[in-house]
Length: 442
Picture (cartoon, rainbow, N blue to C red):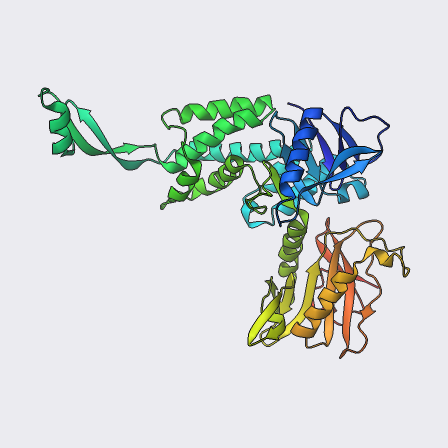
């Protein structure tokens, strides 16, 4: 099983394409490229953000990945690992970029069980998909040590002895000439329950996905424990039947991983025409979750953080509110909204301070933040755009002021992915919102 590691917005071309390679351009097998083109065309019919798009390079057709990261797996097993673009900018290499992504994924609700210490060690020497597989096998191993849970299941059988309730109609129909048999309905205490069927099915799926001999061996060893558990014939239905009874909390992590493995998609990308048969995560949402988790921990009391606030609308029309204003982050106290923040997964350049490049900022983001400030702060106060910190953007930009407002200001601040801190200017009016452990820039 082969594959490559690339970064966001890199370009992929078929092996038959001619010419020299450049940075961000990769050659893949013709069959894989053809499959990606089909996925591209299929995704173009969907209204959701595309994880792949068609483009051209050197006169040849090509496909370009977008801001989705994770693992793309072709039908023949070829794997394309897409890593965050900051890994390329800071020159950290694939292993460091993979470790950074794992730390950021831990901030998502679906990955709260991911153990970063063991996962980061694994990320230094194996692709992202193998890291996920290792975590799943670890959680299943924990269940095996605790013991598989059994439950009573109702069964109907034609037995030699009376057991349970005699099903008279079926008994007469099948045993009219067989006095030695009893057709009964009885309860059987068995490990054949939805939770165990799903784990067994996921273990079987792992054997098809993993290229690691260690993982294959461990998966086979664990399957021996599930020998009496049948493979799930309908995983979706079994997931609906899952019931974690008292004392079954140790099943939760493994079931979360099995859902990810069996559905072969990110819990954040959803279904529909945009569904990729892979594990892909939109970096905008991952970055937002990462920033919100760490900012929430570092607010001064009694302030608190609210994500995706929905308390204001842009306009009112015929007694109806239209166009909900949903800032990523809103810092509040008991009485009022204090600070509006929005995260942007984009790389800025602090040296491009001119009217043409504008640091790489988007005009639409300023319109958006102005609308937030007018509605949530009554047109007076501070709104913040948060971008990842890089070598080209390592200090806050000078403040932006909105003329003809009641004193609304916009700040563009870097968030350090390594220290997990927001760089706040020492002259910012809102600096006391954060505890001293936030980085202050003079």
